Image 1 (cartoon, rainbow, N blue to C red):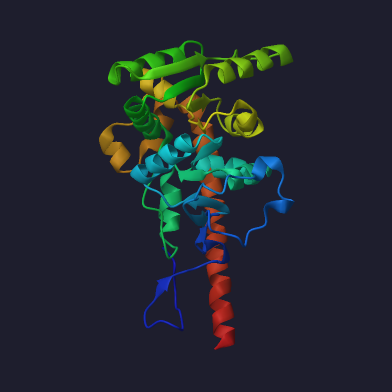
Image 2 (spheres, rainbow, N blue to C red):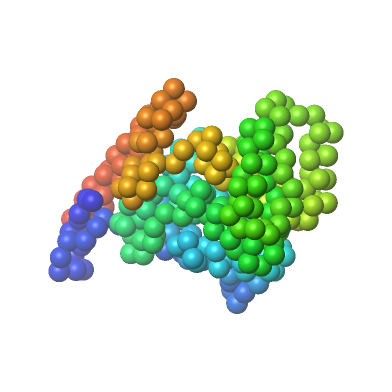
Length: 308
């Protein structure tokens, strides 16, 4: 971690940058925020109190651990107003830079969760770092347990043919009696307007409490944002390869590698042709972000030296 001298403190502290101030989402008692300029898709019921936000590399992450994330999910489902979570890793941050509309989607999310170790490490350069990763793969299992306890219904959408159904059955075996609202896997081609309308109607009629979407990044995030209000599902989440992890069509790293935060390396070595280029792009993007951090740090030091 780069260190800078702060003239207001007696010791060196981590560099702070303009985008690293902790902010807080709207709460029920916040009257300073004017929603009159927001469109319908960006409005949120005043009863939803958003968690503290920690901006990292241009994206505001919810300062939540897994248990706090589950409590927020439960609050959202009980209020019955459509919301969604984003699970963001380094690849997603790279895509956010490429597709500016993702900034709008992130800002409207009930929570952007840190599903990437570099994000957590970078947050430690802020006054209030993130407590740790909240991975989509772990979140799906914990949400299934929560749904089983509260008799909530889960809809499984996406993935390769048969994978969503297999993932649903896998979780139902783990939590007997867990209610499956439905499962659907659209074909890997451009579907017609009629097919898409039928899929939306099927989800609405199923009346799920939780919608798990496995369309891949950023297609899943775009799709959820475009349809979460008309679907009326209390909580929607794009969960990446979590269905594949559940059924074994993709394998998570051994627990030891997960604890060492080397899951990316395991996946790259497991599927080098498919994932190798992606992780190479991610590494290049990380290098860009770190170089930009170093440049901002040097600029900050120069500005402080001029003002002394």
